[in-house]
Length: 353
Image (cartoon, rainbow, N blue to C red):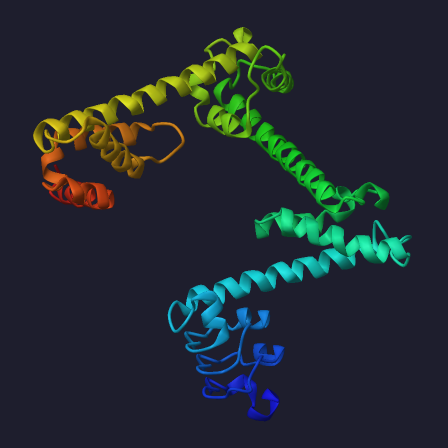
Protein backbone atom coordinates (compact mmCIF):
# COMPACT_ATOMS: atom_id res chain seq x y z
CA UNK A 1 0.00 0.00 0.00
CA UNK A 2 1.16 3.54 -0.74
CA UNK A 3 0.27 4.59 2.81
CA UNK A 4 3.38 2.75 4.06
CA UNK A 5 5.56 5.33 2.28
CA UNK A 6 4.00 8.49 3.73
CA UNK A 7 2.36 9.52 0.41
CA UNK A 8 2.05 13.26 1.18
CA UNK A 9 5.86 13.58 1.30
CA UNK A 10 6.71 11.30 -1.62
CA UNK A 11 8.36 13.20 -4.50
CA UNK A 12 9.77 10.36 -6.64
CA UNK A 13 8.32 6.92 -7.20
CA UNK A 14 10.33 4.32 -9.13
CA UNK A 15 8.27 1.28 -10.09
CA UNK A 16 10.14 0.38 -13.27
CA UNK A 17 11.12 -3.16 -14.25
CA UNK A 18 8.15 -4.67 -12.44
CA UNK A 19 6.42 -6.97 -14.96
CA UNK A 20 3.73 -7.94 -12.44
CA UNK A 21 2.50 -4.36 -11.98
CA UNK A 22 -0.73 -4.20 -13.99
CA UNK A 23 -2.39 -1.20 -12.39
CA UNK A 24 -1.80 1.66 -9.97
CA UNK A 25 -4.08 2.09 -6.96
CA UNK A 26 -6.48 5.02 -6.90
CA UNK A 27 -4.74 6.10 -3.69
CA UNK A 28 -1.98 7.52 -5.91
CA UNK A 29 -3.90 10.78 -5.59
CA UNK A 30 -2.64 11.14 -2.01
CA UNK A 31 0.93 11.56 -3.27
CA UNK A 32 0.39 15.30 -3.51
CA UNK A 33 4.11 16.13 -3.76
CA UNK A 34 4.90 13.52 -6.41
CA UNK A 35 7.06 14.95 -9.21
CA UNK A 36 8.63 11.92 -10.91
CA UNK A 37 6.95 8.60 -11.68
CA UNK A 38 8.93 5.87 -13.46
CA UNK A 39 6.74 3.08 -14.83
CA UNK A 40 9.05 1.66 -17.51
CA UNK A 41 8.78 -2.00 -18.38
CA UNK A 42 5.69 -2.67 -16.28
CA UNK A 43 2.43 -4.34 -17.36
CA UNK A 44 0.36 -1.19 -17.03
CA UNK A 45 -2.34 -0.88 -19.69
CA UNK A 46 -4.28 1.98 -18.09
CA UNK A 47 -3.80 4.75 -15.54
CA UNK A 48 -6.19 5.64 -12.72
CA UNK A 49 -8.17 8.84 -13.28
CA UNK A 50 -7.07 10.03 -9.84
CA UNK A 51 -3.62 10.70 -11.32
CA UNK A 52 -5.11 13.80 -12.89
CA UNK A 53 -5.17 15.35 -9.41
CA UNK A 54 -1.38 15.30 -9.07
CA UNK A 55 -0.64 18.96 -9.74
CA UNK A 56 3.14 18.75 -9.21
CA UNK A 57 3.84 15.76 -11.46
CA UNK A 58 6.37 16.81 -14.11
CA UNK A 59 7.69 13.49 -15.42
CA UNK A 60 6.01 10.17 -16.19
CA UNK A 61 8.02 7.52 -17.98
CA UNK A 62 5.82 4.84 -19.56
CA UNK A 63 8.22 3.41 -22.11
CA UNK A 64 7.92 -0.28 -22.91
CA UNK A 65 4.48 -0.66 -21.33
CA UNK A 66 1.18 -1.86 -22.85
CA UNK A 67 -0.17 1.64 -22.17
CA UNK A 68 2.56 3.24 -24.30
CA UNK A 69 2.06 0.67 -27.05
CA UNK A 70 -1.68 1.37 -27.17
CA UNK A 71 -1.56 5.18 -26.89
CA UNK A 72 1.83 6.15 -28.30
CA UNK A 73 2.69 7.93 -25.04
CA UNK A 74 6.17 7.19 -23.77
CA UNK A 75 8.33 9.63 -21.87
CA UNK A 76 7.19 12.91 -23.41
CA UNK A 77 4.42 15.48 -22.84
CA UNK A 78 3.74 14.70 -19.20
CA UNK A 79 1.67 17.87 -18.87
CA UNK A 80 -0.54 16.82 -21.75
CA UNK A 81 -1.00 13.32 -20.35
CA UNK A 82 -1.87 14.57 -16.86
CA UNK A 83 -4.31 17.11 -18.27
CA UNK A 84 -5.96 14.41 -20.37
CA UNK A 85 -6.35 12.19 -17.30
CA UNK A 86 -7.62 15.18 -15.30
CA UNK A 87 -10.33 15.84 -17.91
CA UNK A 88 -11.42 12.20 -17.71
CA UNK A 89 -11.48 12.47 -13.92
CA UNK A 90 -13.64 15.61 -13.99
CA UNK A 91 -15.95 14.03 -16.53
CA UNK A 92 -16.39 10.91 -14.40
CA UNK A 93 -17.05 13.05 -11.31
CA UNK A 94 -19.72 14.94 -13.24
CA UNK A 95 -21.28 11.65 -14.34
CA UNK A 96 -21.40 10.30 -10.80
CA UNK A 97 -22.84 13.54 -9.44
CA UNK A 98 -25.44 13.65 -12.21
CA UNK A 99 -26.45 10.05 -11.54
CA UNK A 100 -26.85 10.75 -7.83
CA UNK A 101 -28.93 13.87 -8.48
CA UNK A 102 -31.41 12.27 -10.88
CA UNK A 103 -31.73 9.12 -8.76
CA UNK A 104 -32.53 11.21 -5.69
CA UNK A 105 -34.41 13.86 -7.63
CA UNK A 106 -36.50 13.64 -10.77
CA UNK A 107 -36.46 9.81 -10.86
CA UNK A 108 -36.56 9.01 -7.15
CA UNK A 109 -39.96 7.29 -7.49
CA UNK A 110 -38.73 4.87 -10.16
CA UNK A 111 -35.03 4.58 -9.32
CA UNK A 112 -35.46 1.20 -7.60
CA UNK A 113 -37.59 -0.34 -10.34
CA UNK A 114 -36.09 -2.76 -12.81
CA UNK A 115 -36.46 -0.25 -15.64
CA UNK A 116 -34.98 2.55 -13.52
CA UNK A 117 -31.93 0.55 -12.49
CA UNK A 118 -31.17 -0.17 -16.14
CA UNK A 119 -32.34 2.98 -17.92
CA UNK A 120 -31.20 5.78 -15.59
CA UNK A 121 -27.46 4.94 -15.83
CA UNK A 122 -27.84 4.50 -19.60
CA UNK A 123 -29.48 7.91 -19.92
CA UNK A 124 -26.86 9.61 -17.74
CA UNK A 125 -24.05 8.08 -19.80
CA UNK A 126 -25.74 9.17 -23.04
CA UNK A 127 -26.02 12.73 -21.73
CA UNK A 128 -22.33 12.74 -20.75
CA UNK A 129 -21.41 11.49 -24.22
CA UNK A 130 -23.58 14.20 -25.81
CA UNK A 131 -21.78 17.04 -23.98
CA UNK A 132 -18.10 17.17 -24.89
CA UNK A 133 -17.54 20.52 -23.18
CA UNK A 134 -16.88 20.06 -19.45
CA UNK A 135 -18.27 23.48 -18.49
CA UNK A 136 -21.52 22.69 -20.28
CA UNK A 137 -21.64 19.27 -18.64
CA UNK A 138 -21.19 20.89 -15.22
CA UNK A 139 -24.12 23.20 -15.95
CA UNK A 140 -26.24 20.22 -16.94
CA UNK A 141 -25.48 18.67 -13.56
CA UNK A 142 -26.59 21.88 -11.85
CA UNK A 143 -29.87 21.92 -13.80
CA UNK A 144 -30.75 18.23 -13.82
CA UNK A 145 -34.27 18.76 -12.49
CA UNK A 146 -35.05 21.28 -15.24
CA UNK A 147 -33.46 19.42 -18.15
CA UNK A 148 -34.10 15.70 -17.70
CA UNK A 149 -37.45 14.39 -18.97
CA UNK A 150 -39.93 14.15 -16.11
CA UNK A 151 -41.15 10.71 -17.22
CA UNK A 152 -38.50 8.02 -17.52
CA UNK A 153 -40.47 6.35 -20.30
CA UNK A 154 -39.61 9.39 -22.44
CA UNK A 155 -35.97 8.27 -22.27
CA UNK A 156 -36.35 4.69 -23.44
CA UNK A 157 -34.13 5.67 -26.33
CA UNK A 158 -31.30 7.24 -24.26
CA UNK A 159 -29.37 8.63 -27.24
CA UNK A 160 -32.39 10.38 -28.66
CA UNK A 161 -33.38 11.69 -25.23
CA UNK A 162 -29.84 13.01 -24.68
CA UNK A 163 -29.98 14.83 -28.01
CA UNK A 164 -33.29 16.47 -27.05
CA UNK A 165 -31.82 17.43 -23.69
CA UNK A 166 -28.86 19.02 -25.47
CA UNK A 167 -31.22 21.03 -27.67
CA UNK A 168 -33.19 22.15 -24.61
CA UNK A 169 -29.97 23.10 -22.84
CA UNK A 170 -28.82 25.19 -25.80
CA UNK A 171 -32.18 26.97 -26.00
CA UNK A 172 -32.19 27.64 -22.25
CA UNK A 173 -28.65 28.96 -22.30
CA UNK A 174 -29.38 31.28 -25.20
CA UNK A 175 -32.55 32.48 -23.52
CA UNK A 176 -30.65 33.31 -20.32
CA UNK A 177 -27.89 35.01 -22.27
CA UNK A 178 -30.46 37.01 -24.20
CA UNK A 179 -31.96 38.27 -20.94
CA UNK A 180 -28.55 39.43 -19.77
CA UNK A 181 -27.91 41.18 -23.07
CA UNK A 182 -31.31 42.86 -22.88
CA UNK A 183 -30.28 44.50 -19.61
CA UNK A 184 -26.96 45.56 -21.14
CA UNK A 185 -28.68 46.97 -24.22
CA UNK A 186 -31.13 48.87 -22.03
CA UNK A 187 -28.26 50.60 -20.22
CA UNK A 188 -26.65 51.44 -23.54
CA UNK A 189 -29.85 53.00 -24.90
CA UNK A 190 -30.40 55.05 -21.77
CA UNK A 191 -26.88 56.40 -22.13
CA UNK A 192 -27.35 57.25 -25.82
CA UNK A 193 -30.75 58.88 -25.37
CA UNK A 194 -30.17 60.44 -21.98
CA UNK A 195 -32.80 63.12 -21.26
CA UNK A 196 -34.61 62.51 -24.59
CA UNK A 197 -36.30 59.17 -23.96
CA UNK A 198 -38.53 57.88 -21.20
CA UNK A 199 -36.86 54.97 -19.34
CA UNK A 200 -40.06 52.90 -19.49
CA UNK A 201 -40.12 53.11 -23.31
CA UNK A 202 -36.71 51.43 -23.63
CA UNK A 203 -38.18 48.01 -22.85
CA UNK A 204 -40.60 48.36 -25.76
CA UNK A 205 -37.77 49.33 -28.11
CA UNK A 206 -35.77 46.24 -27.15
CA UNK A 207 -38.84 44.03 -27.52
CA UNK A 208 -39.36 45.41 -31.02
CA UNK A 209 -35.74 44.62 -31.91
CA UNK A 210 -35.98 41.05 -30.59
CA UNK A 211 -39.33 40.22 -32.18
CA UNK A 212 -40.15 39.99 -35.86
CA UNK A 213 -41.58 37.87 -38.63
CA UNK A 214 -38.79 35.30 -38.97
CA UNK A 215 -40.53 33.70 -41.93
CA UNK A 216 -39.48 36.67 -44.05
CA UNK A 217 -36.59 38.11 -42.04
CA UNK A 218 -33.45 36.84 -40.37
CA UNK A 219 -33.50 36.78 -36.57
CA UNK A 220 -30.74 38.39 -34.51
CA UNK A 221 -28.52 35.72 -32.98
CA UNK A 222 -26.63 36.23 -29.73
CA UNK A 223 -23.51 37.20 -31.66
CA UNK A 224 -25.51 39.83 -33.52
CA UNK A 225 -26.87 41.28 -30.27
CA UNK A 226 -23.32 41.53 -28.92
CA UNK A 227 -22.45 43.36 -32.14
CA UNK A 228 -25.46 45.66 -31.74
CA UNK A 229 -24.47 46.61 -28.19
CA UNK A 230 -20.86 47.21 -29.15
CA UNK A 231 -21.78 49.38 -32.13
CA UNK A 232 -24.96 50.96 -30.73
CA UNK A 233 -23.87 54.60 -31.32
CA UNK A 234 -23.39 53.79 -35.02
CA UNK A 235 -26.59 51.81 -35.40
CA UNK A 236 -29.26 53.78 -33.55
CA UNK A 237 -30.68 56.97 -35.12
CA UNK A 238 -30.40 60.40 -33.49
CA UNK A 239 -34.16 60.59 -33.00
CA UNK A 240 -35.46 57.73 -30.80
CA UNK A 241 -38.93 58.24 -32.23
CA UNK A 242 -37.71 56.78 -35.54
CA UNK A 243 -36.45 53.53 -34.02
CA UNK A 244 -38.07 50.39 -35.41
CA UNK A 245 -37.14 46.76 -34.93
CA UNK A 246 -36.75 46.04 -38.66
CA UNK A 247 -34.77 49.25 -39.10
CA UNK A 248 -32.26 48.35 -36.39
CA UNK A 249 -31.92 44.78 -37.65
CA UNK A 250 -31.32 46.07 -41.18
CA UNK A 251 -28.70 48.46 -39.83
CA UNK A 252 -26.94 45.55 -38.09
CA UNK A 253 -26.80 43.48 -41.29
CA UNK A 254 -25.65 46.49 -43.33
CA UNK A 255 -22.83 47.39 -40.94
CA UNK A 256 -21.68 43.78 -40.70
CA UNK A 257 -21.57 43.55 -44.49
CA UNK A 258 -19.70 46.85 -44.72
CA UNK A 259 -17.05 45.68 -42.24
CA UNK A 260 -16.76 42.36 -44.07
CA UNK A 261 -16.20 44.26 -47.32
CA UNK A 262 -13.60 46.46 -45.62
CA UNK A 263 -11.74 43.36 -44.45
CA UNK A 264 -11.80 41.87 -47.93
CA UNK A 265 -10.48 45.13 -49.36
CA UNK A 266 -7.39 45.25 -47.12
CA UNK A 267 -6.67 41.56 -47.75
CA UNK A 268 -6.78 42.33 -51.47
CA UNK A 269 -4.31 45.18 -50.91
CA UNK A 270 -1.91 42.89 -49.09
CA UNK A 271 -2.25 40.27 -51.81
CA UNK A 272 -1.53 42.85 -54.51
CA UNK A 273 1.48 44.21 -52.63
CA UNK A 274 3.19 40.87 -52.05
CA UNK A 275 2.35 39.55 -55.50
CA UNK A 276 3.75 42.63 -57.21
CA UNK A 277 6.88 43.06 -55.10
CA UNK A 278 7.75 39.60 -53.77
CA UNK A 279 5.98 36.69 -55.42
CA UNK A 280 5.14 37.64 -59.03
CA UNK A 281 5.71 34.10 -60.28
CA UNK A 282 3.29 32.45 -57.88
CA UNK A 283 -0.30 31.45 -58.51
CA UNK A 284 -2.70 34.22 -57.48
CA UNK A 285 -4.79 31.77 -55.45
CA UNK A 286 -1.72 30.68 -53.46
CA UNK A 287 -0.70 34.28 -52.79
CA UNK A 288 -4.23 35.11 -51.67
CA UNK A 289 -4.16 32.16 -49.27
CA UNK A 290 -1.02 33.58 -47.66
CA UNK A 291 -2.57 37.05 -47.42
CA UNK A 292 -5.64 35.58 -45.76
CA UNK A 293 -3.58 33.48 -43.32
CA UNK A 294 -1.63 36.56 -42.26
CA UNK A 295 -4.79 38.69 -42.13
CA UNK A 296 -6.39 36.17 -39.81
CA UNK A 297 -3.69 36.91 -37.27
CA UNK A 298 -4.62 40.60 -37.25
CA UNK A 299 -8.30 39.97 -36.57
CA UNK A 300 -9.62 41.03 -33.18
CA UNK A 301 -13.31 40.33 -33.70
CA UNK A 302 -15.73 38.53 -36.00
CA UNK A 303 -15.95 41.73 -38.02
CA UNK A 304 -13.20 44.15 -38.98
CA UNK A 305 -12.17 46.70 -36.36
CA UNK A 306 -10.67 50.10 -36.99
CA UNK A 307 -7.32 48.96 -35.53
CA UNK A 308 -7.26 45.84 -37.71
CA UNK A 309 -7.92 47.81 -40.89
CA UNK A 310 -5.26 50.39 -40.04
CA UNK A 311 -2.66 47.71 -39.37
CA UNK A 312 -3.47 45.75 -42.52
CA UNK A 313 -3.18 48.89 -44.65
CA UNK A 314 0.20 49.62 -43.12
CA UNK A 315 1.25 46.00 -43.66
CA UNK A 316 0.35 46.30 -47.34
CA UNK A 317 2.40 49.51 -47.62
CA UNK A 318 5.42 47.92 -45.92
CA UNK A 319 4.97 44.36 -47.19
CA UNK A 320 8.59 43.98 -48.34
CA UNK A 321 9.79 44.68 -44.78
CA UNK A 322 7.73 41.93 -43.15
CA UNK A 323 7.13 39.14 -45.66
CA UNK A 324 10.03 36.74 -46.32
CA UNK A 325 11.60 36.63 -49.76
CA UNK A 326 10.95 32.89 -49.98
CA UNK A 327 7.28 32.16 -50.63
CA UNK A 328 7.39 28.80 -48.88
CA UNK A 329 8.44 30.47 -45.64
CA UNK A 330 5.44 32.79 -45.86
CA UNK A 331 3.17 29.78 -46.39
CA UNK A 332 4.64 27.79 -43.52
CA UNK A 333 4.94 30.57 -40.95
CA UNK A 334 2.50 33.47 -41.36
CA UNK A 335 3.00 34.17 -37.66
CA UNK A 336 6.51 35.41 -38.45
CA UNK A 337 5.00 38.16 -40.60
CA UNK A 338 2.77 39.23 -37.73
CA UNK A 339 5.70 39.22 -35.29
CA UNK A 340 7.83 41.30 -37.66
CA UNK A 341 5.03 43.85 -37.92
CA UNK A 342 4.59 43.97 -34.14
CA UNK A 343 8.32 44.51 -33.57
CA UNK A 344 8.38 47.33 -36.12
CA UNK A 345 5.30 48.93 -34.57
CA UNK A 346 6.83 48.72 -31.08
CA UNK A 347 10.06 50.27 -32.33
CA UNK A 348 8.15 53.12 -34.03
CA UNK A 349 6.16 53.74 -30.85
CA UNK A 350 9.34 53.82 -28.77
CA UNK A 351 10.81 56.44 -31.11
CA UNK A 352 7.64 58.49 -30.94
CA UNK A 353 6.91 58.07 -34.63
